[in-house]
Structure formats: C-alpha cells, structure tokens
Image (tube, rainbow, N blue to C red; front, side, top):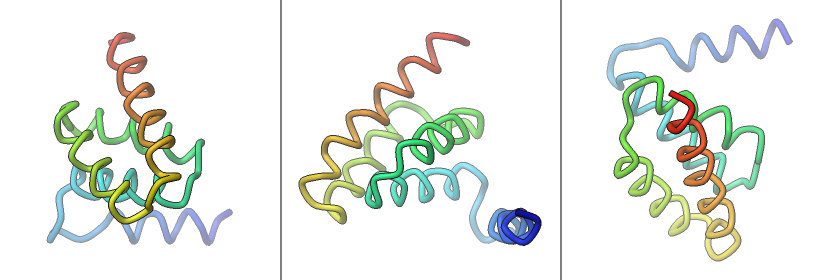
Length: 89
C-alpha cells in the first residue's frame, strides 16, 4: 500500500494537467475497466476538483467510446454517483 500511495502521489504530481483533468481521465479509465469503487472515488474527486455534470458526461462518452458496450452500464452508474454526491452538498 505504501508503494501504491507513492505511485498515486506521483500520478497526481506535475503541472501539465490540472487536478480536474486528471480526475476525469481516472474516471474514464474506471468506467472502461469496469471498476465500481474506482468510479465512485473518481466521480467524487472530479466533483471536488470542480468538474461539472456536463464535463463528467463528456468524459463518460469518451469512456463508452473506448470501452464499448459494457461501459455504457458503468457510465450510467457514474452519472448516478455524481447526482447522489451533488445532492449531498
């Protein structure tokens, strides 16, 4: 876990991409690889970084495009996660 934590810090480091963009990329990958806990985690991260529902929706469209049909179902879960998290603000 320590090594994974260090890798996470390294991935979030750098300045070429802002934090919101990195979270949106992570969310797209989460949908494409069908990782439910990852979807929830990175949806929340994207919201905290300032991503709008529209930005998340466009990100999910790219994930579906790259992940094919099964990603459609996971993209729906990511939008549901956004709506639930945003309602709790």
